[in-house]
Length: 331
Length: 286
Image 1 (cartoon, rainbow over the protein chains, first blue to last red):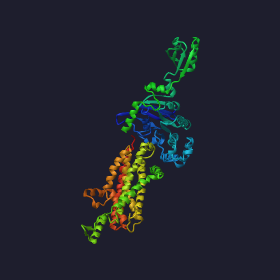
Image 2 (spheres, each protein chain N blue to C red):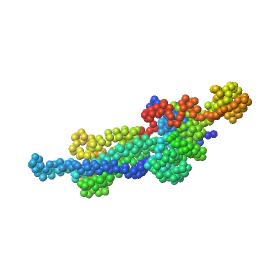
Image 3 (cartoon, helix red, strand yellow):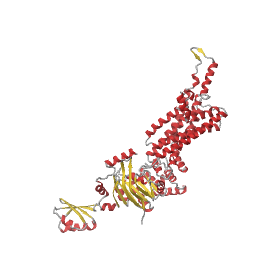
Image 4 (cartoon, one colour):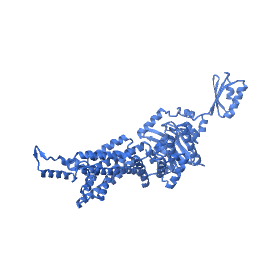
């Protein structure tokens, strides 16, 4: 049985006794898992990471990271975690390799081991060529990769990634995903990441918790979450307006049928069984199909359904944004 | 802890060395204060040689000049008096404004990455103080050189040797480190550069003006003199002048020297402790 490497119980953060940034959240992350916190800006993702990485105190509840209480034993927690923060903290004036070795020193990695590990990471993240250049000459993607290397130099048990692809173009973002996936699958590092990109959570994470206004609304694997929407939606347009709703409803694996003019919206649980049966029914009736589309549920729909908000790249929920500004002021 | 402190200090100094322009403001300040401000004023030139068309006796004029000279600690000219004060001024200003880097480190998230690393909070604080200390002392050395190089500049007393030089810079080092720790703790406590500049301007200038850095204590009103006498900047400047003007110290001067150094050492240790306590509070988890 796998053990939980992160355990949070009623974890709460209140700033200045009034603003609840994180409100009694409980979750756990198994060793080796790639776990994602998904939510709009200001939902409480960064505050949660700050508590788990000892940067913010816990107002109520508790969290164990790598077996240590973040409030009582922050030193032990710090030894076991690597962090890639949202802000790029690599030093512009220093060279790539120098930044990496400084991180190693601050995590007390012996010099020889640090140099070996640095070489390995620079190779893995395809930064060898740039390691002797000052970071100010790096592109955005290179900075992110260097930051990732800095978070890994001391072989942490858990890697925290706060919005790891924020501001990157599609191509660079997908490269980052590959690195993160490889680190998790091949090196066995547990990853806790936050993101407000749905497709990122969908494509990377083993399990996701959806957080909004400081509360976890739903958690599970991406496919579980999508299944909760009731599966695939088939849109079927016929040439005739004869009503066959009842016949369609009778088909196994069809959960819902809605008709509008000549168009039917049909919810399916198992597409591979339902689709042939639907087509057969229509054909037997002597009807012709003028258009047919199949829509897999997306996390976007999940998010819309549970929070009542859409979550678009860059767009922020007004309240959430206000919340973030308020927290910054209160600090 | 020492390893971490040194690693972090080395990081800042590396950045500093790679940007030679960074020492220019300090150097300009040294040159302007000494060469322009220092040269424009020489107190003995205030003594008239005649009043209302009647010539004063050269003996009397000589006596007045030497009396004024003694108020200035026997310095051969104003620049010789002023050098110690300007060095003290420059190190204080450098330590104070050096805090800007620390505030920027906080704003850029660098400080967070240090706080989440398994290093002691003390090493974060002391590396902040140490990096600015090294920079300030380097500029202090440059200032001393500038004072020696300008025409009619700093005149060292006969017998001024390596020990005098070390004594002068130890006195400056102690006052610099002490105030440096205070300013560094302020830098760790504020969230933006504007607040830092407001606080350091409020602290740094009165500290310097309420000392004998620019003018001798003998000319001060008594209330200001009382404050200036216990000001560590006064102690450092007076100690440096003692060593610069006199070269070989008499036994009386040696005991003044020893007393001042003890005073400055205690001051440095106490402010390092206070600074650390303030910074530790500021570095706590938010």
